[in-house]
Image (cartoon, rainbow, N blue to C red; front, side):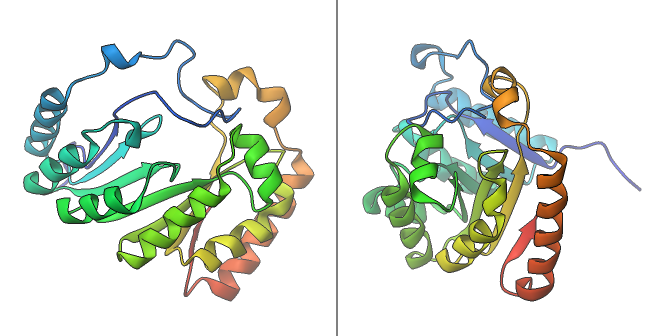
Length: 223
């Protein structure tokens, strides 16, 4: 017997973000900080979601770490019985905050990377970010969170898909999500810049299949 109950909730706590990625799928008319749902409202939303049968929760944005109550929301999610993932750029994932998330019961951290080439990664992100992201990844491993690397693929990074997979493996990720650009929000505005060629896609698929066969036992690759 099947049901129509939802199983997963992606909670976009904020649209604020320190990065300026051209593929961002945030709406062009962003919700401003003063109009965001407050802490108690988010707690009520999560409680109601659990009553509906939701099991998995993603705390996302924008960048969820710009909210000072993110750990409190994660702690409430734990009490409600969610398996919770922090979906983050890694900027702001300092040791004190990482330790608070661990104490709050957070299970899983997903960190976005823009490219394996440091200069291009920071060009895409629009800010200096590589050092902070790698420090965040080290904290994720040290504190024994489940760890996913997410990379949005497009014309500007797809030719380095081998290096991207190898970087995720070197960082100790349990899995890597090789995501397609979603062409709405800023992604739609910048579509001409981002759309890969057919040749890039064909080659990328072959590369991913080869890596799955070779290192799939230590790094799960979602493509």
